[in-house]
Image (tube, rainbow, N blue to C red):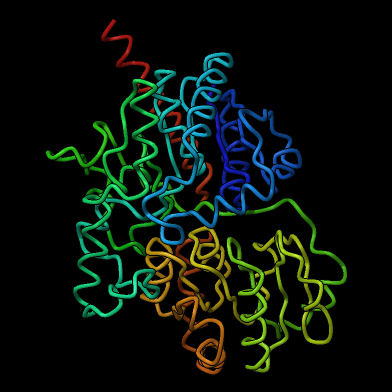
Length: 431
C-alpha cells in the first residue's frame, strides 16, 4: 500500500495528490489517502479516493492560519504547528501507516510526515518542493527576491541578495525548531535545515530540464554531501509538470463570458481577499474583462459588468482561452499557464515562487511582480505590456510545446513504484 498525505488547505497540493492517486491506481498499485482535513477535501470525494481523516481536524480557519505561517510569509522562528499538534499528527499518521500497511508515504505539504514516516519506519516521497531543490541553489539560479520580508534585506545590493537567497536554504534552520523539538520527544531523526524541510527520501522534481536549467544527469546524480545539511539518503528525480486538471465542467455562464477570448484570468490562491480585490482593480484598469477564480474567498462584491467570479474552475480548460493569466507563483499555477500557452503576470509571495515565475520569465512569456507592485499601477502596466507585445504569446506557445504532452502524474507514479521496488529489493538483500 502507498499512502498519500495531501494538505487540504491547498488546492494545488490536494489536486496533485488526486492526480497521483489516479496514476498509481492505473499502474495497479494499492493506494490510500490520509489527511488532516481542510476546505479542499471535497476534491478527494470527487476523485473517488479512499481517504481517511486523521489527527485533529484542520478546518478552514485553521488552514488559513497555517497558510499565514508559511515560509516566506510567517515568522521564521515558528514551525506552522504548535508542539501539541505536531506530536498528535505525527503519532496519528504513524498509527494510520501501520494499520493500513503503508510501505511508502507521499506528502503534499503535510510536513509532519517527516516525523511520522520515521516513527513508522518507512520511506517518504515528496512533490511539494517543486523545483526549489539543492542543485538549483548550488547553481545560484534562485533570483533575488521580489518581496523582502525583512526591510534591511531589501537595502542590500541585488547581487548580494541573490547570493544570500541561494545560500540560506541549506545553511539556515528557520522554520525547523518545532520539528526538531518534536523529533527529540518522539525519538526520531530531526530536520537539519530549511532545505531539508522541503525534501524527502525521494523528492519528485516536477519540472523539465529545459525550463529549470539543470541537466537531468546533474540533478538526478545529486546526493547530500558532508556537513549534515540534509537527511542521509535524500534523492531527486525529474518527473515533469504536475498540476490541477480538475474533473469539472466549465459552467454555462462562464462559457458565455469567455466565448470571445478577450479576458484576463485571475487565479490567486493562498492570498488574502484584499489582495485579490486590488489585483482585479489593476487588471480592469488595463481595459480587460476579468474572470476570477474565487477559491475559498467571498468575492461576490466584485461580480458584475466586466468581472465574473466563480468559486472553483477547471483552470486547465479555462486558461488556454484567456488573453493572459494573473497568478501567484506557486508551481502548479505557473505550470498550468505554461501548458496553456498564454502570457502571464506572476506574483511571487516567497522565494520558491520567485523561482517559478523567474523560470517563466527566462522563457520570455512572463513578467514577475512583488505583492506590493501587484496592487496598483505596476500590474496595470504589466498587463498592457503582455497584451500589446505579441512576442510574449509567441514564447508562451513555444513553452507549451515543451510541456503540454508530458504526463507528470504518470511519470511520478512510475518513479515512486520504481523507488519502492528498489527499496524492497535492498531490504530482502539485507535480510
